Image (cartoon, rainbow, N blue to C red):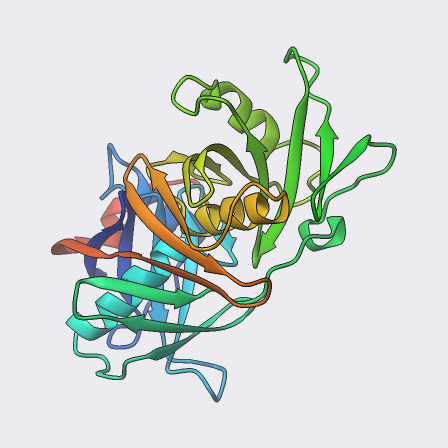
Length: 292
């Protein structure tokens, strides 16, 4: 079966976007892994599938599959690429658009300067919201935030995390220098920590000033990416709750800058969405012999 696809990125966080409105696609985990494979497939951090909505108030439904084939709840950079894709493909001229994701509805607006703004939806901070087991852990109050001390037996020193759920779960750690921090080692240890029943996105935040941070994120099911939209939001929110930041916050990732505003209730993100190329792929040939 031949599928049309579009390769896109938001600040370097890259996607294969599939139109499930004008072509029939029932994406399996094995197919998602094959598409995301950077050596044998197209290559991407995530696969985005655009479909007709199930919710009566939504214009479209969009689903997110990580490079490991697992479906996840939310992707901020993907949301911006979604609205650009819908407009470029002529699926809708509505602006703003209402997108249905696994945990609710998003409102997205494409501006004339090439930027896309996303109302990111509900933000939560309890261990239950992240499927996190806090039993017996040492905690520390920091401003309005509660920090949790994670036990990483193979690592020296202490790791204190803020917990932030923006549909998907994030653990945000404050670091002195994000470029030299051992993200490649600590990221997987935090992501797969047994206290997170559904794993977690691990963010490493360096504060530059009260409106500016630098960030690296080791994403659940994808590894370290050049940018993470929900991770940028989680870091900004955590910094504001800790009393270290004030809204708006510029978040510099390795792939570019994102801009976050949060007033304690409404969370908005603004950033770029770029189309790289269009193509066709024989999904059956790509997944021939691929384990399910």
